[in-house]
Image 1 (cartoon, rainbow, N blue to C red):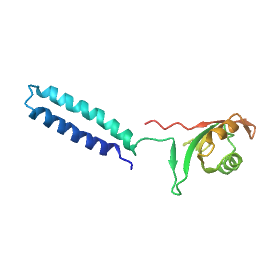
Image 2: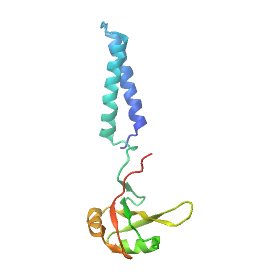
Image 3: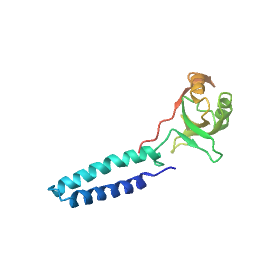
Image 4: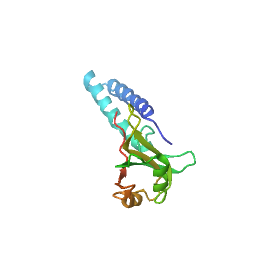
Length: 153
């Protein structure tokens, strides 16, 4: 079962309120700021623990499960020939790994290819395929292949 961050935060807030109620009703001579601080500390510990325990669905992952239940990963491919199109890249990479899709980057203003792109592949032997494809020559260009990094906001 996957639990999202918001669900973990709600559960954590419940722990914070419960902690506040316990500390404030225990007839302890604790000040309000200390009671709130302890409650928030407990909730700050509980939230990440719950997220890791249940596997937060909001966590970004390197791979994705397709509708067919197959796991895919995205590869970055740099130094692509500018004349290469998606079909040519897909055919070349199919000799090494099961390719799902190819997305070549283009300049928004001119529409010309930028010489790099992303390939979605099945995760079986991804590292082996990277080893085989990195520094291979494709249409007179030496490819640079590695795991794609997550896009930062």
